[in-house]
Length: 110
Length: 114
Image (tube, rainbow over all chains, first blue to last red; front, top):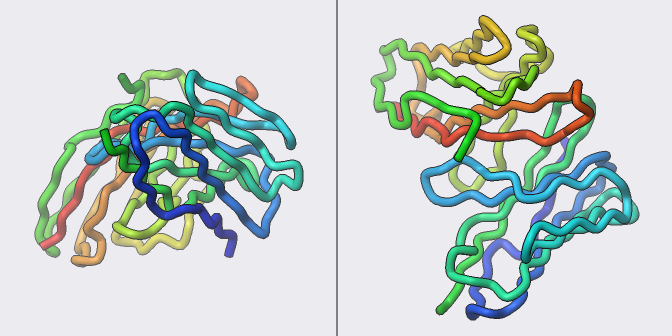
């Protein structure tokens, strides 16, 4: 079935560093969503992407919809301790079916 | 801040019990979803309702029974569950009519089956 490969699986970074993570698939998606999930909570929507090549920012977060429509990237600039959490990508296939990645666990060292 | 609420937040039940999870969205959306989140696995879509009609049923065992009485409320009825059903159950909503594919999640119900 369809699958999203998210990398890295986890990363430790120093406060103030920039972070990059990506999501790849063998399938084409028409929409990409990026979420952050804190322990014991539901995922919170960060950025939505609708067009191939689109670059969208939300504060220190920037995400891109890959030109092949098979991948997406998320960058976090100048990380801070509250950026800790698990980041998920999700691709929309069909009308209602979202496929989620396995997540990137981010830990920020102060 | 969330426009999607879920109750209870935590639930422990025996394999012979019957319980229900409740989800309510306050966003005026017309589609609602149930997901299962297990450790080390991606979120798994279970059910989708659009305008109170079930549009997706992702090969979920019959011991999980969804109900959508109106566009704001979604239930997941549970009976004779197995220990491997222990997971975080997440509800989400979206509104396709506004041309948005954004999906918003509730805080989840942490279910433990003993």
